[in-house]
Amino acid sequence: MLELSVVVPNYNHARYLESALRAHLEQTRPPLEIIVVDDASTDDSVAIVERLAREHPRLRLIRLAQNGGVNAAINRGLREARGDYVCFSAADDLVTNDFAARSMETLARYPAAAFCFSDPARLVGDAGQVEPLPLYISDGQCFVPPISLRQLYKRGWFGLPGFVVYRRDAIVAVGGFVEDLDSWADTFANCLLGFRHGAAYVPEVLTVFRVLPDSYSARCGQQTHLRRALTYRVVDLLQSPRFRDVASFFQECALVPYYRVEVLAWLFASPPRRHYLTPRLVVKVAMRSAWKVAKPHVPSRFRPPVRRLAVRWARFWTAE
Image 1 (cartoon, rainbow, N blue to C red):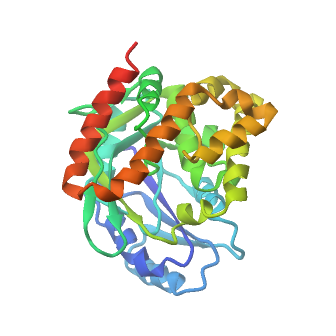
Image 2 (cartoon, one colour):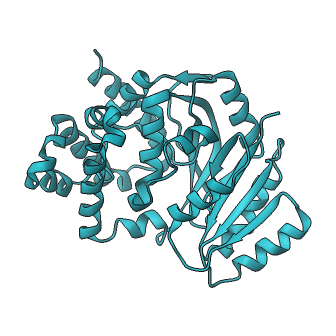
Image 3 (tube, rainbow, N blue to C red):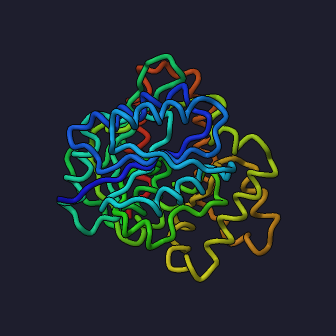
């Protein structure tokens, strides 16, 4: 029977780590292994993992002597993973108890898919309020071929969740995560695999990501020079032979790490990268910027209808 490896990169997340690990340990279809790659934590994360590992042999710990960043920790875990499938689960995220079963069942049903994704949900801080974020792709399990995935991205509002279940061979074949892409490494890998092979989708909430003011993605986006460097790095990568086959797809879908007006200015100011500046990217930046301004004024109960209307409008806008 095909099995799942769970890789949990961790750096000083002792506060949430046990809950995250127990969510995987209590799956209806338990994983083959849960590999915690501790990135030189200074809190009591290691003690928590060691205590749980004494009760659960499928849980094992890899301790890194020096902090190398989350993507390096993920890639170390990927090299250690033995399962047919693998997922990279943040130390502060949660999963439903049928996450593994539903994901692997869907991948078995659609053998062409490089990974399986589902509707995500957002948990803000420690408040305990979970906000589902439905993607409105299908009413049932389905295979999303590369051309359909590109159409979804061209609509303007769609984004693949970062938390997916990969076929291990597929993610290994692309070299895991590009480590210097920071918090955009998962998006880049998912789009790369999706544009090459397609993906499988489950229209249910199986994963819950936690929103924290000091999260990794928040920290990565706080400094202007780092945002600019990451934007340029993505465009440069897509011009390399390694990714040339999907470069035009990234461009036509207007994929960038940040949808801000400054990104348009950076691309325009750089002649070698100016080709990446397209009308669709300008429209996407305008849409995202407008929603960022409007969102705080929209009561949470009205946000799902707004999302549905946005999806319908975007379908009309991208109709061919």
